[in-house]
Image (tube, rainbow over all chains, first blue to last red; front, top):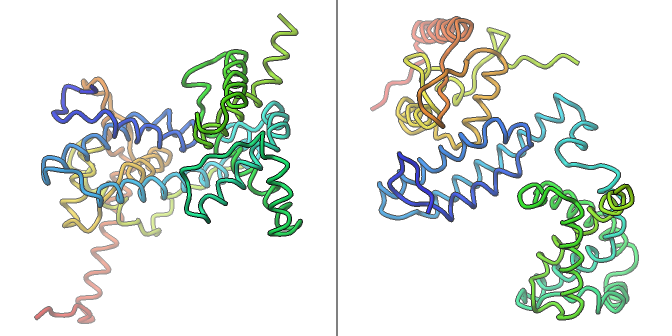
Length: 227
Length: 114
């Protein structure tokens, strides 16, 4: 249970949610103001609970719209002041490893994205994708339904967006600093999914595992070679 | 490339959140949540800041050296106060508003509320 000397209401889960949201800000901004923003959020949460006896949905609406607006503002501010190259390198962490990993990851994220959209259209998010098993059948299936050009567009647009979103969340910094460890973890997860299939883990987690395995794989190989 | 100065032009209007933040800090040094509550009180609940907009504004004010961080005894919270430059700038802005209000009064532009 998380408590400071000033808080009387324990707010573990909600603080974790807001702390995760803070990862969407540029690194520099988050390091400078992240802790203060979290403290303010906790004070707001405590006040809301004291005044109303519960946390109303309007509280979360206010917090999320404030966060969305300021996240976009800070990213645009960074680009305006530092330039796009520095933004790609320092905020989105785009480097040669992530580009190589992104290319290797393309088949998996394509099918994950297509499956996810299909599930939303069918209003059936309870069934998860089985990307490796159904990859080729899905490609031919969607090509028949929506045509080659939209499919190509989807592949080219969806993948970079997903890769960018996944790159912003620095899982490897939170849990592991060694790319070799993370690559092994990702490949182990991948092996588990091949053997047990999609029911074991939701498709979005599959995507995260694949992504972090693949982007760390080239670096891991280089480290092992130089060791 | 030189960084754009947000508040260096004294004729530039302040946004309401920034105005009320400067107003809050003109009285005493405060930490983030204290600033937020004071802004809400001073604006009669018309301006409600979230952590994102609050610290976005604080960041710009720090960059333009209108406010500065203060060393405090509190282990985790950071306090802020107006600098001399910030105080002068804010004072000039208040004078500008005062002149505008006087002009509006002379021209009978204020509507009477029934």
